[in-house]
Length: 263
Ligand SMILES: [Zn+2]
Image (cartoon, protein in one colour):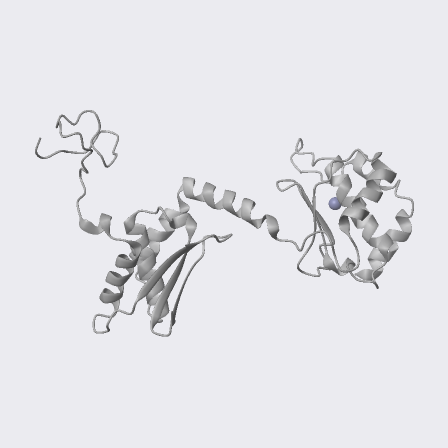
C-alpha cells in the first residue's frame, strides 16, 4: 500500500480501490505543502518573496460578499488587511497565491508579474466561474435601488392606482424602486430578470409633475404586460400592441410634452 497514485477521477482522496484496511481516507498525490497553507500563510509567504528584507506585518484575510469579484488590500496601523470576494473562498491555492502577488505588489506599487496576472484571469474566466459571477451579480445587484417609498412619492401607491385604472387591478406587482442616480436619460426601466421596475429619482421631487411620473410608470408596466418579442432578428421592445395600449393613457400627449420639457 505504498505509493498510492491518483484516484482515477482525479479526486484528492483514495476511493474504494484503496485496499489499505486502516479505514481512513488518505490524501494522495499532494505534491507540495502548498495545499495546506491557509490564505494568511500564502499572503505572508508572498510578502516575504516581494519584500525579503522587510519584517512581515500581521496579515488579516477576510472573505466578503461583493456584487462583483473584487478584492482589496490596505496597510493601516502596521497591519495588512486583505478583503477577497467570497467567490474565491474555495479557490485552489495557486489562484490565491496569484492573487496575493497581484495585491501585495499593488500595495507597494510594484509591477505585477505576468504569470500571476494570467493565472488569476484564467481562473475567473473559466466557464463555471463566469456563471457563478453572473448569478452572484444578479442575486446581489437586486438592491441597487432605494426602495419604493420616496420622499415625495410612493411608487407602490402609484403602481396600484394605475393597476386599477388600466389593468383591472390584475397586474401582479413587481419589485418597485427609486434609482440611486437622478438620471435624465433613463427615466424608467423594467428589468425582467429581477422582475423589477426602477424609476429615476428625478421624479421624487415636489417640483416634478406627478403626471409625468405616472406616465413613466405606465410605460414600464406595459413592458411587463407585453414582453419583448425575440422572434425576429431585431428585438422589438415596443410592439404595435404596446404602442396601441400606450395611447390609451388619458393625458398621453400632455405627459409626453412634460417629459420633453424635463429633458
Ligand atoms: Zn420602453
